[in-house]
Image (cartoon, rainbow, N blue to C red):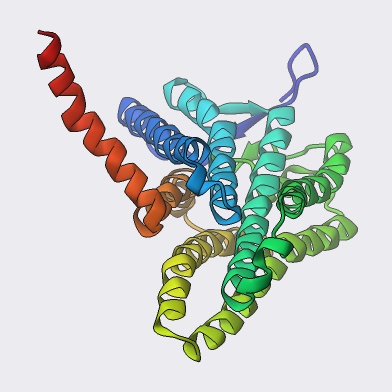
Length: 317
């Protein structure tokens, strides 16, 4: 439907019993958003503050967590507003923005995991050449590519959407994803093929690269000393856990559009919430608990907060 200002509004039809559980949804989502910001920003700050964490591996982890914060911030304000609104609607331009952020930052997640896999491979399989390969300039270039390549590819895919005519004004979801094409009067086969190419470039190829790299890495570690095996397991396991969990969420998006699977409304709603809650909250917990150096600094921070501050207050009294 079009307003007097020629702004196209889309009805978000993916919400389930929002009128009945409006405030419950709002409290849950607000709590999740605050936790996401606190957990991710805490680890990023620890990496920034402590010089022993100024290594490529931890810099890439910080970039991954910043990516999660950007991803969450792109969707949570609108979700919180929808839960408190009588009608859940979105402008078409905002929908396009959500589409861009969803796939550019989602693609950056896979690219960053691929970069982290390469870093671990060089560290374990070529330790004597690690400092010469993973220089500051190399790290900067890899980070730039991880964010710019998906953004550029998704932007090219997005530009034709801006001029397309809309015939369907009800979107079956709460976040504008790949099914946005079903709103258009005419669907382009060329555009669908390009979307598939983008999907392969920003998801399939990075996942295959990570799997290939870790297979090579574990083969080398298997024939090496116990210390090398321990290092490989300790540093690579968190990356694999994050990769598997995010790949499962990516597979849902593929089933949703490419196979034109018609999921029940409740499943769409739950899976959409999983994407914006589970993964951004999951990343800092995994890296905070599984990465030894980060866990040590987190533990010191927790002990200092719980025990030192009360003692200082008693001294002042």
